[in-house]
Image 1 (cartoon, helix red, strand yellow):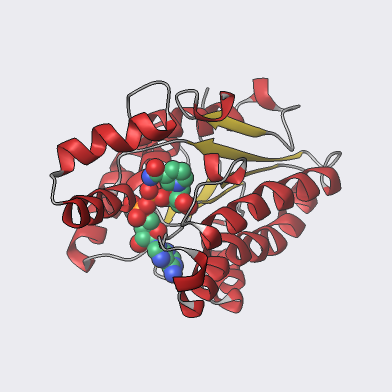
Image 2 (tube, rainbow, N blue to C red):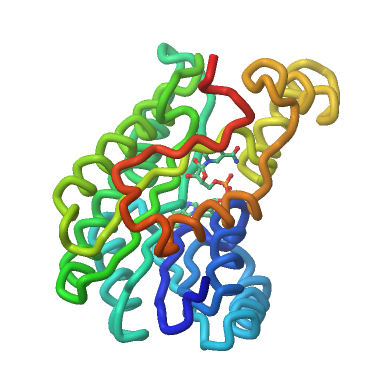
Length: 261
Ligand code: NAD
């Protein structure tokens, strides 16, 4: 498969899963716009790496996606810079862990804004151009928590269930426009988002990160192994392939059996 001539925007791609997806798209020749936070020197190095891999100039947009108008403006800039936006990967996300009665309302607002509303704003801004050009691939990174719940993650679980629902609606509305819209639902992927949870658990339990990694996996996943960002990248590539042109509105689990239970 080649994505030469295709343009992509991957939100939250300075780290973790988003970076894995950006690298996979670039390896097939897509012209990629990165987004997310981080050290400017590290981001500059990533832009250079992704440009060299894909053979076309990558870009970086530092938009804070917790504001809807900023999401739309970022999509417009990406389209203008590259002349199109063929592939949109809505991936940026955050987490907060606490029981509902102790869950800070401002963390609820922040998680809903980034993990759910930004996905709506991104799709809303990208679909008209994709429809006009007759081609689009939208990939929303949801979670196993888009399909089932865990205690202490009310905002995250609500947002990710919302992403799965919004994905289905967008798929229906674009079914005959050359556009597919799908959700990827990973189980545990070892990224900074999960590393922070492991460190918090180890501090609270007086254990270490290795012990908490084993416990974390065994609580949820029959397969006691983390998925890699590279594997999520490979699944995203499949969704961009011609073979996947009738895959739309799907929620694709990549979760070591988590949601089979
Ligand atoms: P991560 O913390 O490694 O990366 C998150 C990315 O989002 C970073 O690039 C960060 O800079 C960016 N970001 C954070 N706030 C932002 C904002 N306001 N505006 C723009 N960018 C922002 O996390 P990750 O584990 O790679 O998670 C990526 C996605 O995958 C998230 O949506 C997460 O919910 C989902 N997910 C992760 C796992 C997992 O086990 N790691 C499992 C299922 C789903």
